[in-house]
Image: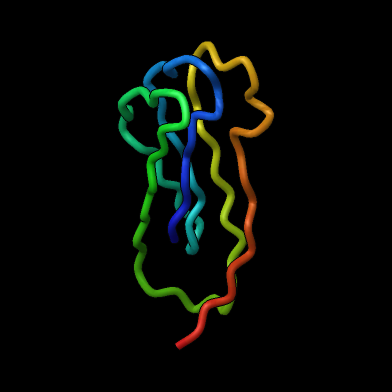
Length: 83
């Protein structure tokens, strides 16, 4: 699964991390990531093992201190798996 984290603010962010749920009931917690400058983005790609599930709803959240607008720090997306 791949997603993007972008600093849409006007100041450089603090260092940050993210958490994402994965099929099979596991959760991945990232190490601390480098700060993002305004309009800078990080594209995150997460791989995981095979699953018997035919679809899965991924839940991810970004954790950063001092964020003035944290309402956009999460996402939830259903994905169908194909062979």
